[in-house]
Amino acid sequence: MPSTRASSKAAGAARANSGQAKARATPKPQKRQQPKTPWPPQKPQKPLNLRLALQAADVDDTLLPARSTLRRWVLRALQTDAELTLRFVGRREGRSLNRDHRGRDYATNVLTFEYGTGPDGMLRGDIVICLPVVIAEAKAQKKTLRQHLAHMVVHGTLHAHGHDHIEDDQAEAMEQLERQILAGLRVPDPYSVG
Image (tube, rainbow, N blue to C red; front, side):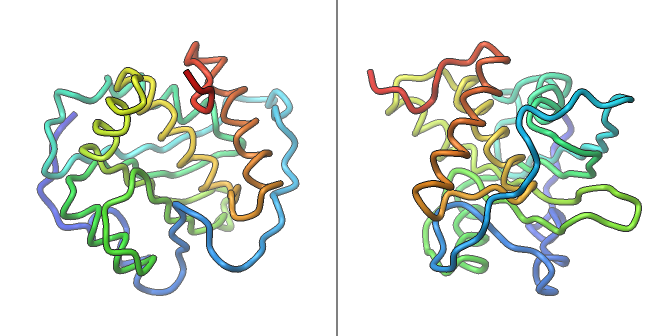
């Protein structure tokens, strides 16, 4: 994957700064209803159209899976045609985005900027994964980096669809979707203890 040494603006921060995007990572104070999209989704008449841009900034992109693998992970969680950017960043950019868009002054594992669905029916969003945080979490949780990255990609894609984990019932529903999707990818339950 080619590296991009652009600022966070390249990942769609221009759209985010315009007030159109919502960054998600951890619970927010307001209550949202879960999307009404059934899971697993009905088998589509035709394959889903995914336009996926991959970016890596200030990270060792040799640690990342192949483009085809990242695409497969996104497609597993995708419920509609989509145009998404999957951006892998270092701690500095991860912290800056989390501070600027969520008011939290630390780097978090994944942030999703959802832009909704356009008139063409394409879901649009940016998924920003802070690679150093994910590496540290994988080590602490005794998971492989590949397993944890798969989880973060699926998690971010579900956020792009509007899924959230603000309330307990939302968290349970989202976690169940993640388990089902990840099982299909042969990734162990990310929420199991031990």
